[in-house]
Length: 145
Image (cartoon, rainbow, N blue to C red; front, top):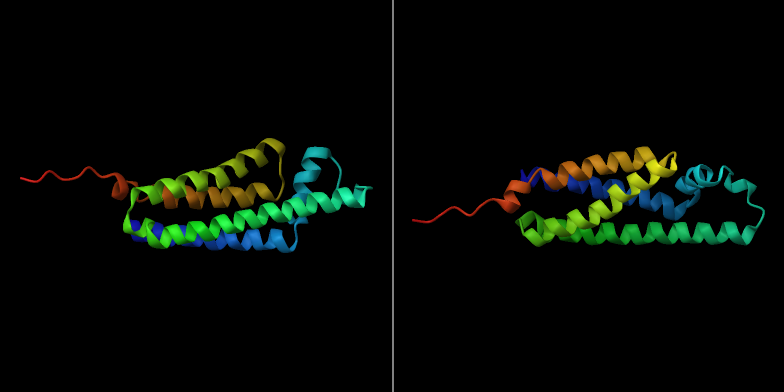
């Protein structure tokens, strides 16, 4: 199960990086629907160009931070997680839940448009990948005679 989980989480990290790169290159990709859900206005209706520039820069920066977290998680996956080290499972659980579950809940509450299916897919892949090998990480040690 551990090898399957590594493959599933690898797919998740590829998916994450693609979404994050889209948001870095075109920050209005998810920002537009989120902004409209919160304010009822479109980004095109913003009269202050500096305000639009500021929230676009902030969105791009957050995508970059998520990109860096995905790169770090990939290193954890291919070093410690695939060797069934418990700390790696906990690290990926905490970071993944913080990113995927928080993003999904936040967008469901706000009605984040395009972000809801993106976070839903990521959350499902994450939960399957992280919980599939849980017995490998937390199996009781066999008693020696």
